[in-house]
Image (tube, rainbow, N blue to C red):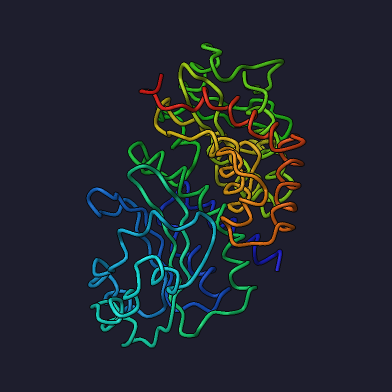
Amino acid sequence: MDRQLSEMIGAIYDCVASEASWPTALSLINRQVNGFLTTIAVFDTRTRSASLAQIACDDPDAIRTLMQHAKDVPFFHLLHRMEIDEPDTLERMFQLYGADGEAVWKNGDLYRNFHTRYGVQNSIDMAILKRPFRVGTINISVRYQPSDPRIFNTVGLLGPHIRRAVTIHDMLEMERAESAILRDVIHALEHAVFIVADDMAILFANEAAEARLREQKVVRAIAGKLSCIHDYAGNALTNAVTLGARDEIRIGAAGIDVPLGSSERPAVAHVLPLKRRNGSGGYESRAAAAIFVAAAGTVIQSAVEAVAALFALTPAERRVVGYVSEGLSRAEIAAAQGVADGTVKSQLGAIYDKTRTVDQRSLQQLVRDLSPPVRRPDER
């Protein structure tokens, strides 16, 4: 299974340099979960247009039919309520829609013309990007009723890797060069990009990255190694680079949307493992990762999101941190989530280990400490 996951993750990361690689990656996912048709898309919630839309299916006629009726989905306005990296079925969308969710769906053109025609019984859906005006999703149409936890676990494991590839794609969309070689793309970017070895030694920095180093507002070079002004950010990036160099499967959510801790010029970074892409990317064999620094102000985060990104928290742990930041007690958090007190105790224990805090009070203080670097530009 690790070999198959590694193959899928490698294919997903190849899509950063070449959008045309997505059908290959989606086909691998399709086969792994016995899917019929898999799509990935990033929507502009203001215009309902897609900045990224890719499909994998062995039936060309099914692809044409889906494309003809794709805009007939009655749940578009609910996409932003899907949880990041948490796969679920159509039943979740029915619940979010309301009491008549299933009836509305079955009376729709997509259900009648695609699902019924091709024997699609359900789908596995997951959010892989959430921005103020962008929502990314992956949808796997299946000809069975998915109930095996292993299927959801597999899709969930792939979630952070898809999110990393889509996040970087989304960030570079307007600047992408017509090239399949990552290095050629990077050279012309306005975003700062560093190529580092597994010990954070800087092997390459584009012009924007060199400017960041000269400013020393969020990053700097110490003895030729990339360092962050904010200690938490430096630890988060180093951890992600190390994990990715050791085993791409284990990197998970680490190194995505890492806040770099500048209240003056807020920015976030994303880590893309390169070990498997050295040959095609044009980098020396020491290259362990590419670190993309989004331009200041392009990503707005809450303090809870910042904590989740810095310490690679799971979606469930991120929710608990949100409750803690609001001042809820352990019992109140359990009631809010509909789980046992012991479950919350275990979640808090895992959070304390990751964040090096000792109790809810110190966790609240950490959230407060991280609020200024990621506040909205118009907040005072």
